[in-house]
Length: 405
Image (cartoon, rainbow, N blue to C red):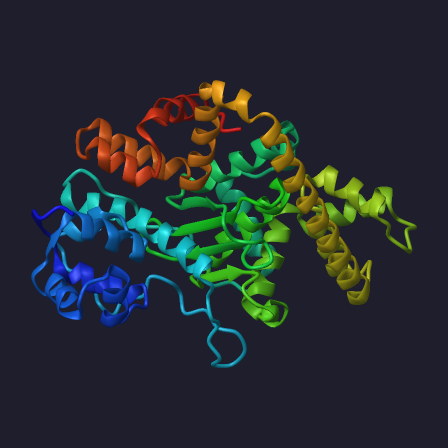
């Protein structure tokens, strides 16, 4: 173990421990040191390199954070105080906490750069509305991002459509990250509000059309200044905020007037809806079947009972399909392992795509700008983007071409 001491800001060591919900004795046990050693680290800031890296891993924080000369607010919470019914607090899983901390870490990287540099300033997030009118808020969002049916029809690929709207929302100063290690049943997405660089997270395991709905759902959370996690608990169906965000997101993607016109023109005499009809509508509006199902419910074309039965049926079918895909992917991976080892370039392309989806274009561009301006080192660039330096070139190529498929 390295014996040379580094001078960190001990207040950040204390802050990171508390935010990770560790008592001093618990982290001392994990670090295999005595309690007094941890206390001294936090009191003086003096710590050797190896132990700093270990602490960073336990706290899920970038090592750079602990050198910040500005002191943290020890009362600040980095994850929202999500609740279920009444005052009963929801227990977040370790995987969810890790995703939320990782998102906040990335934002803190950028904010620390802004604090240290005179010409590095981010705008205040301007979208704001107190209206409780679903149609008015949806129209407000559609106008801001320039969403028209004719424009939607031009974008053929589902992934390209998602990337298009992500790009529009990133231009509003929103960081958008995709996460990989949480089940859809646990969390589809999240919204973390900040005046500067608010954050939207989307579960990469979702279908592109499902991600699109989640994207706008979480954007509504930011606009009304109410942080949230989608699919956090079974009470979402009774949560007024979730119901409102669902309604607005659905209206953004499918305006009610346009939907009713489509129904009157092509489905006027339908008394009982089937999967084929719902699929045709989802294809026309380029949304998920579930969004169409919800619009049919809002339009009083189906009952709540039918909605819940069909939703459950689709969820079970989706899980079965994903399980089969994972099995086939693993099987095919084992067969082609030797070939894949020879295709390093393709591997770098895939890694670059995943890195861009995890970090979002806005965050990635800002970090690269800081690097190109010699404001951060190779190591910091790698830490901030969580990638090996070998794939930076591919990331640049994808950003330049606008293609992250």
